[in-house]
Image (cartoon, rainbow, N blue to C red):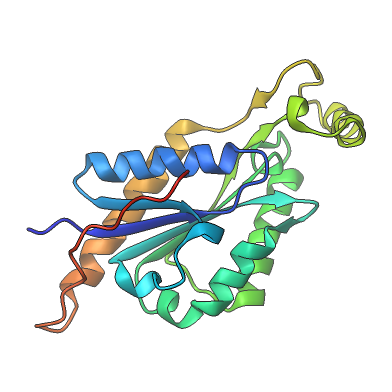
Length: 203
C-alpha cells in the first residue's frame, strides 16, 4: 500500500508548538507515512492541503489568541480542510492548568478559532505547552510569574518549565492516523491521494 502523505503545519512563538509538531511528525513517519513538517508561514505558495491525504495544524495561545498566520492559512484553505481528514492542536499553559476553569478557558479559545474560520476538523485538542521564562522579555517574564504564582504553577524564572503531556501527544497522533484510512478508502476509484514525496520544510 502506498505511503500516505501527511502535512503537519504549525505556528509557534517560543518553540514548544514546533517541538510538539515534530514529535507528531516523527510518530506518523515511524508508522510509515510521508510527512511534511513546516511552519505554516513557510509552506510554499504552490503547496496546499489538497496535496496531502491528511493535515494536522498546531498553534499556540498568545494573549488569548492563536497566531494570525495560522488563522489566515485556515481561512484560505477552509474548503479543502473541511473535505479531508484534518486535526488541530492548541498549545498553552492553560491546557495543563490544575483547575477545570483554566482548561475550559483553553478549550473556549479553540472553539473561537473554529467558529471564526469555519473549519470543522475531525479532531481538535488542547495540549499543555511550556512556561518559557528564559525566552520572555523582562516585562512578560514578570507578568507570567505573577499569573503562574496565582495559579500555583512554577515560578523559578531562571529556567523554562515544560508542561506537555507527551503520552497525550502520542494518543493524538494515533487518533489522527485512524481518521485518514477511513477517508482514503472512501475516495472514488481513480482518485488516489498524491503519492510523490515532498521535501520537509525547516522545523
